[in-house]
Length: 440
Image (cartoon, rainbow, N blue to C red; front, side, top):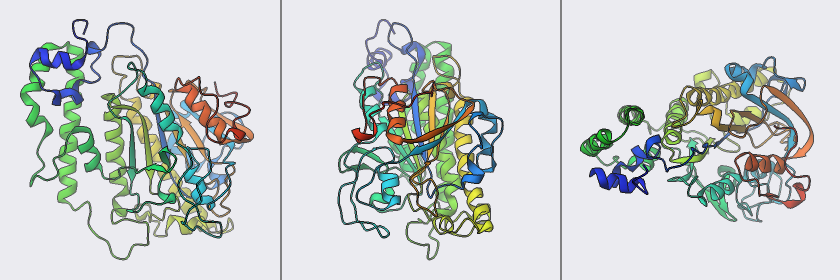
């Protein structure tokens, strides 16, 4: 692209409209002149209600030789997985453990006083600070070489239709929660354009056929191959969305408990769609920061597709002596781990556009939770399972840490994503020792 200062200049040159930009944003031969800069990406995946420690954590620190039941789906990625036991949410103040668990998870700072009452604790409001994903977003967006179209994308899977502290983990700033988009159709419209009001779902590609052909005629074969892959994804996703809508994706179901939307039984389908949209957004370089939030803190999904009719949250309150509940909770966390493994697989089988290796080699996935254990509501030993190579941490191992504040891990993620000038994050009292040592 040495003769064009921007991709818009290129499109004007070939006579194509700016509507084609989503399809040419990551074509290697249209990159600015100079060495190719590695694209690092971060994904934070959230699932609620703690874990069953005996079926989740490796027994000993050191090389990961095998996984327990909850983490077995990660077996194909064992050498690219890092488990962190002993990372604790030290943030106290207003709010119950579920509220502080999700509201302070990525912000590392206290909640405002408020009028949302939770459990037997004091009521609380939104976070008093911004989340680390948004901090990294700001850093990347401040540099033209790393800035992307969206900066960050917030995906959801059946998040309740209400706004309160239990339903938000991403914050643009104090009192500024960002709602995840849990409707794949809405996310598709954000990425490619809204077709929802048509009687039959029309195609983005039909509208752009001539412009896309002009681009194909003017770029190298490598770019044509990437362009065709992206077009195929968009076409397939349009068909998927049309089929889902005709099948009644939003069909009502009777008398679900508060917080479980009518899409409860479609959680697996929605999860798959959202993961495909996320991978495509990364491949097109729409963003390098994404979060995916499954339900919400105190999430009460009923995972009937696993043979579990009970509310997830209700099960998480059962004592350890209830072996049946422990088995069901392990099934639930294993299913969430399957979603993590599926995301890792999709990234691993997708070559890095214009770079080396796979997209997983350059993406750091962080799977986490608002609680360490559901029935005790502890904020100690918060689950953090890291997969991928985006932050260049040493993987294939389990770490046992001495009750360290999770602020230090948030700082480590920022440094791993290239924001090394950041000296503290969240409550500074929990960053005195800097980022976690021993990760690399």
